[in-house]
Length: 528
Image 1 (cartoon, rainbow, N blue to C red):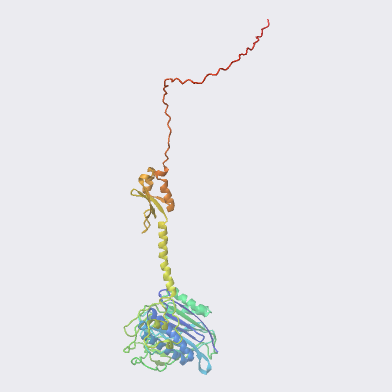
Image 2: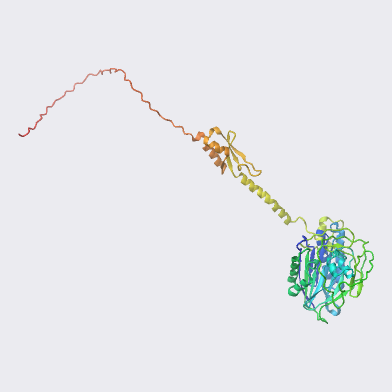
């Protein structure tokens, strides 16, 4: 019985704007896809491949079931690219490991790979690369034309010879892994191996026990080294493994199955004249590869007249096998026709499509909106986008009204010619908001005090229209001039008129008798 646990991390990197990588974690299936084919195409290719792989392997959880799942994933991506001109030329790498029943009922891990996303086994403190990169430089190195050091900097190191979804048929390289308790499997896109060396990767895997934390630290290390590409890592730990017959992990390469249908011209075998990286033997895996640098990418489609590149040769132990020249990779060139599709990156992952794409696909001609929904392409206009647009539009509108309020929150009493008027606005105006006349008072400059004419010409500001009207009333002469009436007294010399004799009364005078009383007066005599 084998018990697994896993952890993953994916990041857009520090250069790309779209993340076209996609990890997969299931209890018994783990994968990494690195899509290509434009802003939408790469995301769709990776998502379609991973979703189809998951569904197909669920039906048959064996080594052959994993191989068939790769074939179905390839066909699904190929069909989508052919049915939608916007997705033409898209493709993806795909590396997956699955827990299956092996010989004699023992649990083994089946490993499959197409492209240059890699799989490593970390066992006993040592890390070994299992998969071969399907790139032209790596194939030439394995053919003996260049050395490993030359392949690391070769201009053809990002030209792929195999990928998923660029033709109707593709062959996947496959291995059986017999691992013990404590062993680890690392699946990663080239965004990690292009930036971080094998020794540093092995150091992190040996120091960090939790698979999720180890995956995150590997992604951070790639970003610290430049992060020139998307970075995706899946770490699978064997918590409980089968009892091995011998010491260490055992890696057994599997031969290719016979293709069901061939859509390209027959490709001759090319014998390997010199060893590059040691071939995969039944007793153990090959040595670790050198680091690769990043490159920009275009993805051409494949035509029937294409020929196999020199050095396009894959070895499975001691048995030769044909290298199918059928596909590109995420950010590189694919060996094929000259048609090309630019590649972009994103930080968001494409949401999964409906469980049964074939059943949801309408008959007849499909509308653009229905096709986008079927492929899981996000809508461009969403409530969140509409809300953002409204918010952005509200900012200048609010600024307009605030500015208008400030510009007209003032009243100025001034003279317009000879007429006294009240204007609303700031003196001189604010931007395109100029003062406007709101009250013609009916007074002229001749009706105000002379001392007020100077300030009026410059403009007298008031906080309100009522205050401005009160000010106008206060400076007019009709209300402020007080008329005082003075009474003057003039002294005129009087001239006496001639005396006019008064008329004598005509009454008879009454005689009143007067009685005279004689009072004796005694005079005192002085003493002698």
